[in-house]
Image: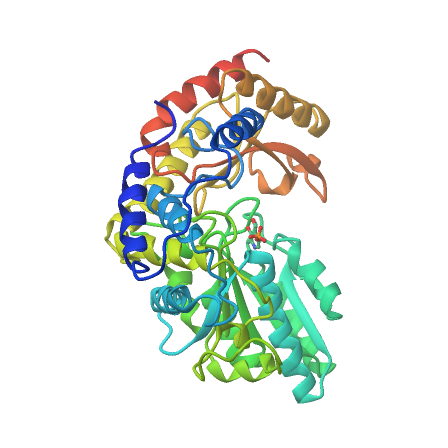
Length: 456
Ligand SMILES: Cc1ncc(COP(=O)(O)O)c(C=O)c1O
């Protein structure tokens, strides 16, 4: 069997328990209106869904994609029988409380003594809220808002800044894809002279190569230049729990609690279905910016409704139920089972990098900081190298090994000839080894990659 089904039994049992809570209500007719018709269209949906890469399988080692943990899937499905809406306590009393608890556990993972935070539909909206708060603070201070993020930051920051009407500039990276502290410092000097209100976006795990910006050094600059620091840890945030040697990881994890705002995506490494991002603020008083009057929403309780501290209105209470349940089973603890899964991902990435470095058929980037590995194909020119990378990608897919492609600066590859590097980019292979099973599957992954490369 390829698709896990045992959780269906647990769902059946949990549904019985859920129903028990509503036992006093009069009966309503159960079951779908026409179960044969429903089975038929579900069968068609299943057939349509076959046209996907097998994200659940360890041989899918391409983009940042994986299915949720069975407990998250089951808890989400369970909540679907109610479909709570966490905008207001009227719509989702229990799931709002679960959201508050689950978010507090994430804040504790980052070492925050106090926080304001909530779930969002994803990393983009979570980052939007963090930058929006930066803009509101700039307005309060009567200064122009400026966002500084690295050239390897997720493209969402440039786009969100445009949506928010904020100026956004990119800062150069070093040859490992990390924000250059000296480039940031010279940009901060100019911003200081222009009296701009700066939000620096540091990325804890860049999307393309999994680089960790030097957050400890950026925090030192913050003491000198007094900017607002936002950490985009949408992909990498959970790695603060990892115990591996982690080049630059431990230092950044220690400094992260100094940031003013944070984004982490439970729907990436937090084992959740899509629709689950999270934004956190170190200073809870920024909640004042969210204040609004709603003539129709908040009547059932004088307690805080999550819609009073979110930009989005309707949000899936099921996402909160799934996250809460997952964190009950797999607490966010160093040395715990969940942290062990992340350690396995790091080990898989290091294993793949070591194999690539030992093999003349490949040119790897520097050693990975997290669980993303990138490598190029040797060739007389960058164009030819890009073409070969695309050919290996296609040949691997024919062998059921699904990788990804990425366009990267040539200077990220130490073994490429110096003359080919200045400002040029090339298409490379990329693998996000974000399933803990990738560690055990690495020999099989390597065997298929090797076979694909031999076809060149
Ligand atoms: C670092 C980073 N920030 C933001 C995002 C955007 O998040 P989402 O796709 O959940 O909107 C991503 C997505 O990969 C990311 O890796």
